[in-house]
View 1 (cartoon, rainbow, N blue to C red):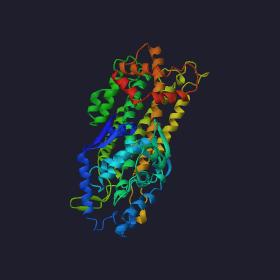
View 2: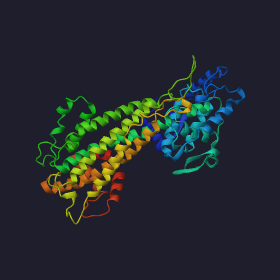
View 3: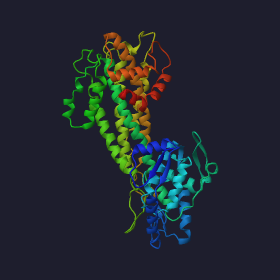
View 4: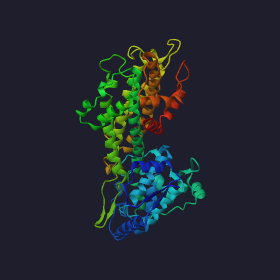
Length: 506
């Protein structure tokens, strides 16, 4: 059984993703972490006579209202109940599990003023296979991801009020009180400031964006393979991959994309057989377009690596005092998410253009129309491009930046918000669409590579040839018309990170 120990170290995005995807992985707090949390709580309790936002005041626009000492704990209960106002479908339990881990990681820094008992309860919650039922709508990405995180806080303290996901060999949505009974988890009452520490931060937005980014980085590498296979299917020249061209541009990701594609087609006797002096832009400018996407994803990674290791609640407890700030504002996550969306939209758009070219007999350099051996009687891959066009069009609509929007909340006290969850959800959807588009291109390119091999008597490169051989174990050459939807679904499932690793490493 694997274990993740929180002891003051930064977490990588991959560690968070792997923890979220493996419910049997346990999380543990080391003694130094618990001592750090205890000291933070002592600092808060030493100042309880002061007027402290969210500890003995109301919230948001109600911050000017003082709360009596006897009502401080009732305030915490009321906060999480009133803020549990999300709607829509729940996000996947893996995303919610990642959000809880990110929140726990924040709490272990000792700046949130919670008790060690609460941190231990959150760890126990995760270790018993529980994940909150966080609805997709309800957070505007400022003042924290309030509504989705309130559902988590309620499941810790008042599980009878909410549903949760329970791991029983698979994730099952169930009533919170039933999950508590099955797992033996003990709900924990919340003391001063603890409810606010649980819900005031960016872990929900960050978890969504994290999954979108990691998928996006994989799709960028898969896009390199799609470009290489389409080059071979079309007999494209490869002179545009010359490293000197890209050295002059001084954009590292552009040079990397060109290098990757050049390695993939190395040894191919299919490239350069079209007789073209210059390849069309969708092939020739791929390093420039995908390079820009790669730079955008690098920016998003830098932001998210910082965010998941940050302290993002409010107020924060220091030796010098308790200070209100704005680290809960998820504008960095919103901008990172929009960059992911734009990058993947670029990739899907240029992929669809290559797919179109593969199918059009006026553009595909001697291949049969729609890659069919018997066109007319057979329509071949014609409608695969229709599907890709519909997905790319949706991507373009979804890629409108969420981070430029703001609708004031809380009687205009919270008068600028980030809309980070919207941006991150869109990035996830665009990633899903882009995966389908690349799957369609690669399926068509595989067909085209075999047809070009027959046409010119050549063979693919070492890497592209290995990709073709692996694909043919699952996806057959399409001799005559058949339903293509199952093949596209199977291709998308097959084009996993494991597939790409096998292709690249042999």
